[in-house]
Amino acid sequence: MDNPFAPLPVSSGTPSGAVWREGDVLRSSNGAVWPCRCVVCGRECSSNNELKLQLQWHPSWVYVFIVISLWIYLIAAAFTRRRAAITVFLCDVHLIRRQNGTRILIGFLVGGLAIMFGAFSMDYVGVGVIGVLLLLGGVIMGSLMMRTVRVIRIENDELWLKPPAVFMEKVA
Ligand SMILES: [Zn+2]
Image (cartoon, rainbow, N blue to C red):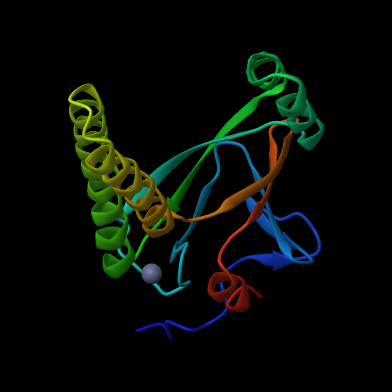
């Protein structure tokens, strides 16, 4: 059996195949299928735990528009947005954590909204505030549990990504 902590089959510096390392970031081509290693912890994992990630990115200067108007920002973001998709893998532990994260996010979002609207419509402001806090807490916690790679840039069907530090430590 392979050593689960062996370096990932990813080349350093020069482009090779679908994924390669460039300093602190990983570069990938759009549509690439990554090596069968957990994208969170870098350990070997089952090819059944495949995860198709739909990623999007827009240039950071677009955020300037938030100061002017949220609507202008949303329109500018829609026009400058670039999308890409990659296939990554998760180990059993991180697959379950991601599934639980999705449940927490959806559960607290729906529950929080229901409490919020119910309470505010009946003028129970205190209860409404609890609903808002539950919603925010659940969304933050769920997002953290679902987290895999962070998009730094998408350009010409190529991606610049920042996976968790543990994963990068295992990249050659
Ligand atoms: Zn893992």
